[in-house]
Length: 92
Image (tube, rainbow, N blue to C red):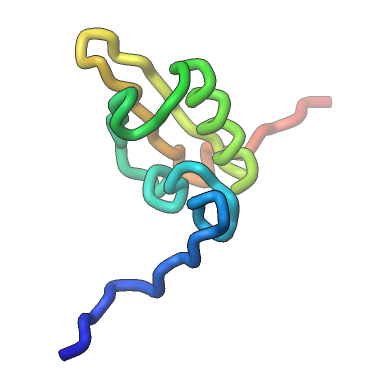
């Protein structure tokens, strides 16, 4: 019997990344929910590198994101902000 999937799978590239080339599952992490990411489990590299990558991924989507390193939890917390909060107002 065949297996039913919730969505069509992304095609892996030669580098083992999704065909879009992104290292991390931004479509899941930037869904508006609060995600706690553990170093070495959910991401590689430094907190600063991930923070920069998260902000860049949100910016590509025309959005903003909140980030916080919780040393007491040992986790990096991220949340995509609602679209109306992503608008930058220029004065003048």
